[in-house]
Every structure is written in structure tokens, then in C-alpha cells.
Length: 436
Image (cartoon, rainbow, N blue to C red; front, side):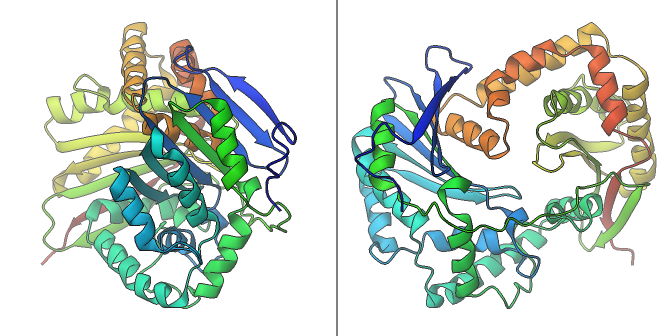
């Protein structure tokens, strides 16, 4: 199966959606085998970013093989039956291209940035690696040591440990509650056969999006896909389903200790909306900035500038398909753990009971919009933005994000805080130096 090169204008339909730069519209092409292609031509930029997204993150793994999606990411670059890893590496070095990959709970993605004159050769080999990964048994055993070292390094990072702990408390038995890397024992079922089976079932056109941004015409972009992207469209896929994440029934606390710790950590987490709920996700982005975005934000003004009880504080909202995650993380002296958590809850309570002022809203809106603009200046940033939101089913929101932020009213933010940011229903992890 795959694309028939003689069907250049058959079996696909195209839509054009808005973008922050109306001179260079984003084109979305849906193929009859399920593949989505997102393309944006930006003239006079001599490079092209190719970002291939697969809806095959942690949520697609079987419970028996945690870390499978991430391990497959490593194995993708081990070559195919016709392309050795060294051959691809030499090609990248010769052309000055950059390649990398990442795995998340909802997705895995692979991206390359190449000079436009070399795009055909790069694209053909890049797609070959992703779609036809050989996954040899000998390489699996070698890579196991690499992944185990990565996991060990992560567990040495106190901030990572706290984040994984609070996610586990928030999402319980849902895959969102386990680390993308897997666990230190790396399941014995992490075999070449299981990895190949996961790749075969998940890396198929209906589960994938190809994003191309740069000085490449729409016709040439689709021509490259037709010529080089060949994937089965008749796979019997059995998506893994999980219970919908639920709000904690009370404060869920996990207390951790570690030796030789310079400062204590406090992280609080709330369950946010899943994708597909209008205006919710980006509204929480705005509330995050209101709390910790800049020296005049509420929590920095109160806890750092006024009281001096903390060393640093940060909050963010992570959008996820089945339920988002709003976090507040703090570095502080262990003596202030309890009182700082209480004061943060007081601020959360105020968000749900009192409307913010127009002046404060304007400041937060400008910061969020500026951050969006600064994060979409390069072709790889744009490709990543489009692919990420498409993998979550929210591509049109990505295009209209600045306007959506500007349109939010104080009453909407108050209602949002009431719905999702409870001062009594949340998960919290504390990490402090070991006693004695």
C-alpha cells in the first residue's frame, strides 16, 4: 500500500487555515489513507524544517512495557535494511543538517532542519528511517544500556523526581502518571519483537502528521510526500483506552527526602481540561502568567519580594489530550514548606472569588502574546508548534492563539479558576534534606 505516484491530485483534500503571518498561509492536506500534511512556504528562508509527528507516546504503550515509546525513539536512528546509521549521519554532516527527536505522553516526533537544495535526499532517507526501522536485536541490547543511563541520570535530578511524583499522584493509574523514560528496571518485555510490533501498529499514516516549513512550494512538498512516504493504510490498530483522569478527592501529599539537598522543593498540581474544550487551555496559560510571570506577578511579589520565603517559583499549564496539568513549583528553605503551600492556596482561592483588574489582565495578555511571538520566529519553532497542536487535535487554536488570549475577559478567568484550580483538591509533593 502507500501513495500511488500517478494519483497526484486524487485521494486527498486540502484546507487553508490562518496563521500569525497572513502573508504565508498554512495549508493542511488530508490523504485518504489518514496521513496529514501541514505545509507553510516562507520565501527567502534557505532552509526547510521537516517535523514528523506520531500519536504514539506513553498513552499508546501497553501497561506491561512502560517506556516502550521512548525506547522506540532511540531505535528509529539505528538504520533500516537498506540504510545504515552511519550513512545517514554522514549525509547530515555533509549537508550541515540538524536532526533530533522527542517523546511525550501523547506523541513522539522526529525533526530535521536542512538546506532547501538538499531537501529531497534528506527527506527520502529521513522518512525511510522512521517508516522502515529495522530494530535489530543486537542494537536493542546495546541501546538498553544507553536508556538505563538516561533514566539513572534523570533520577539524580531532584526537580525531575518531584515532577514525576506529583504527576503520579495527580493521574494515578493513567499513563500520564508514569515517566516517559520508563522505570529503572526497564521491563524484561522490552524486546526487539515487542518494539517492532509497536512500531508496525503505531507508525502508520492514519496516526501521523508531516509538517514542512520553509522555502518549499506547496506542490513540491506534496510531491516529496507522494514519492517517498510509503506506509501501510490497512493496519488493524487497537488503541489503548484508559479511564478519564479525575480530580483528586482531597489534597494528595507525597513527602520525599534526599541527602545533600541544597534547597527544598514544593510542587503543586491541578487537573486541567482535556483538548477540545473551548478557551480553557489558553485561559490557564494566562492564569499561570498572572501568578508567576515577572517580578510584579502575584506569587513572586508576595513570596519572594515581600516575604523573602522562597528562592524561585514557576507555574505552567501543559495541554494534554485526555487531561491537562497545571503546576506551581517552588524552591525554598524546608522551614517554609507548610506556610508557603498555605499562602499559595490562599492566592488560588482569590482567583476564584475575585475578578482581576483590567490593568493586570492587560499586562498578562501582553506577556503571553509576546512569548508566543518570540517562540515562532524560526522554521523549526513553527513546525514544532503546528505538529504539537495537531497531535493534540487543536491546530486551529494554535493559529488563533494570540487573538484568543486578547479576547479573554476577567469573568472568564474567574470562572476558569473556580472550575479547575481548587485550594483543597490538588496533588502536592515536597522534597527536603534527609534528617540526621
